[in-house]
Each structure stands twice: as C-alpha cells, then as structure tokens.
Amino acid sequence: MIEIARQTNGARFCALFFSAFVVMLNHQTSQSLFERAKRVIPGGVNSPVRAFKSVGGTPVFMRRGDGAYLYDVDGNRYIDYIGSWGPFILGHNHPKVVEAIEQTLRHVGTSFGAPTELEVEFAELITSLIPSMEMVRLVSSGTEATMSAIRVARGFTGREKIIKFEGCYHGHGDSFLIKAGSGALTLGVPDSPGVTKGTAQDTLNAVFNDIESVRKLVRENPNQIAAIIIEPIGGNMGVVPATQEFLQGLRALCDQEGIVLIFDEVMTGFRVALGGAQSLYGVSPDMTTIGKILGGGLPVGAYGGRRDIMSRVAPAGDIYQAGTLSGNPLAVSAGLATLKILRDENPYPDLEAKGKILEDGFRDNLRKLGLNLCLKRVGSMMCLFMTEQDVVDFKTATTSDVKKYAAYFHAMLERGIYLAPAQYEAMFFSIRHGERELEATINANRESLEAVFAKSAVL
Ligand code: KE4
Image (tube, rainbow, N blue to C red; front, side, top):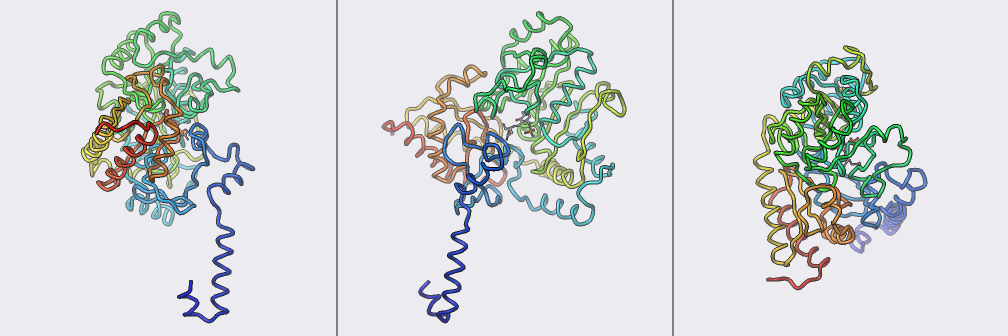
C-alpha cells in the first residue's frame, strides 16, 4: 500500500484504497452467501447433501474449479474429491470438453426440441461402450433415468412392485425414497414424507449382498415383481461393492422369474471402467441407468437396455416418457467429448495406479496410528468408514461414527482437502489428481486422523 501511495498521487491512492475497501465490504463470504441463500432457497442449497447438515458448519461456496482444484469465495483452494458428485473424472475444465461446449454454443446452439445428428452419434457411442444397452433414451438427470427405467420395466412386465436395496440411492423419485441412501440417509429421511402409501407399498427393500433376502421377497410376492434395481457398486452408503456371486445370483433369479434386472450405473458408469461395473463383473443387466460422467458436467442422464424392452418406449411403443431438454446439443457435446476422451485415451490404468497410491497411503496411516478403520475402493471411487466393521451392506455401513466423520471432514477441509460432507458418500478423484495432490491428501489424512482420534501414534 505504501509503495502504491508513493507511486501515485494522494487523490488517486485514496480512490484506489476506497474502491478496495468497497470491494472488501461487498465481498460475499460463504457465510454471508449462505445467509442470503437461506432466505430464498430451502436450506440455502439446491441439493440437500451440499448443506453440511451432517458435518456441521457453513457450506463452502465455490468461485471456480480447475483441474483437480476448487477455489472458494473466501480465497481458499481445495483438492476436490467430490468432482460434482461424480461427473469430473477428467477434472474441471478439461480443454477438449470446454472446446466442444464452446463450439456447440457458437456454431450450433443450446437446444431445439428437435432431433439432431449429435444425439444420434452420442447414442451410438453409448451403446457401443455398454453393449447391454442395445437402445438408449437420453434424459437430463440420473433421477429421470431411474424413474423412467422402472416405469418401463413395470409397463413391459405388467407387474407393479420393485425391489431395491437398503442404502442404495437411485435419485429422488417417489418409488426410491424408501430406505434410501445418500442425502436421504445422511439427513435421516430415508423414508421421505410426501411419498404416498400407495407408492411405498410397491417398493420392497432387500439387503445388499444377501441373495436370500431377495429370494424371500420374490417368494412372498409371486409374479408381482417388475424389476430389481441395484447399484452394482454401492456408492450412496459409502463405497460398498456387491460380491460377484450376489450379482450372479440376482441375474439367475431374474431370468427364472421374468424380472427386469436394472443396474443403476449413474455413478459407476464410465467411472470404474469404460463399460461400467457390469463390465468388471461380467453380469449383463436387462436395463442400465447412467448419468454424471455421461454429461461431462452438464445435465445428462440416460436409460437403456434390451431392444425388446426399449421398443416399448414411446413413440415406438406405448410406455410414455418425455423431456424438453433431453438430448440437447450443448449437454450432449460435453458428454460426447468426455466419452471420446475416455475411449481414446483410456485413463483407467492410470486412475487405478493413483487409487492404489491413495489407498496404500491411507492404510499406512491407519496402521501407524493403530486404527483399524474400514476402507473400500473400486478404481477412482473410495470411502473411509469411521467403523472397524467390514462394511458389506447398509447395516454395517451405519455402524460408522458419523460424529467422528464430521470431525475428520473438517480437519481435512482445514488442510485443503474437500471431501463429501457426509459419511455415506464416495470420494472421487480424476486424471488431474497428480503425485503432488495425492501426497498432500495422504499427509492431510494422517494429520486429520491423528487430530480426530488423538491416539498416540504407533510409530
Ligand atoms: P441425479 O438425479 O442427482 O442426477 O442422480 C440421482 C442418482 C441416481 N443413481 C445413483 C446411483 C446416484 O448416485 C444418484 C445421485 N447421487 C448423489 C450423490 N450420492 C447426487 C448428489 C446429490 O444428491 O446432490
């Protein structure tokens, strides 16, 4: 300031100082923005899990993202392990994705409500990458995809009930908000008010990784189950992989009973492998829902599957589903660019190597601190549970000490690591998380665990 004073005449310096002061006064902090937001947006956020409810404190308002980093309005920088809850496997602002969006915006447009070649190319790419999706319908969110998929399964089978799994989350469609995971579980509303009894009675909950619990429901509801919908790798009660035999058991049961098997790969699609979790397990569902990475950061979801099922979808068939912005060129161009990069550059071996570094670093910290916490990882999605139980389902996941997780979350945040503000979520990393970011994260993890558990380290 003194230097500036010396270089400018007094009046100009005062003008500079005053404008800096005004900017400071007007500067919106996360706190002030949150207070403003709560006056006009329920809970101050546009999706509950962002509100820091289960970890306490004020949600961080972000100013921008770049690569592996987020920058908040308060001048802090974070290594981002949310990635907008999954989409950013390529990191924020990948140049080819930005270029694709800019080109479409400038030379095509955003949306016409009319078919375009771009969405045909996109559908052809999706069905080539996930062969079980013989046909696909684009929508604008994961919720739209899952809601539509169960309607199609009900229409196709003429049956009404569905089986989901405790702790799995399939978006906020009424049929799914029964013992749901993610934000519903985090906020303690796994069974949301507003879901009618009529709807709830048609949703049955089984136990994840327990094939007998599924067989029992099927026995008790003969010829009434339209679909079984599952996250093949649970990502909404923390990261909980299904076992191979469990998924194979579901496949066999659905074949035997004429039930539509739906893999909800909104989170795992293109995340754990280019062909999704189904390509890792070698189990083909009858229908699949996808989203998140599919849109490259813009709103895109999709559902698809066997041709005989999808041919029932209007206007080819009689099962209705529609959407104003479905397949819009702008969002499709972001998704198309993203999927092409994943197909052509194959980042999965690199992501696996990064995941191993992160996982080994966390496990090394746990060992040195004498902590036996459960850590689950599949590819570039991982979860550290604040429990010593081996987490294999909703029941074991909820033995986690959510208060400890809250303390760990804030300790990591203070160290510049932005994790999901809830135990029952996944941490995601991208191709832009390099050695420096992973090392910083492992160090922060060690310091945060020490702070939270305050145990003498076994060094
Ligand atoms: P959206 O409607 O939020 O695009 O997708 C719903 C959905 C469907 N299926 C699975 C397996 C999902 O994980 C999701 C959404 N995931 C949450 C995070 N766990 C979205 C974050 C949020 O609700 O804000």
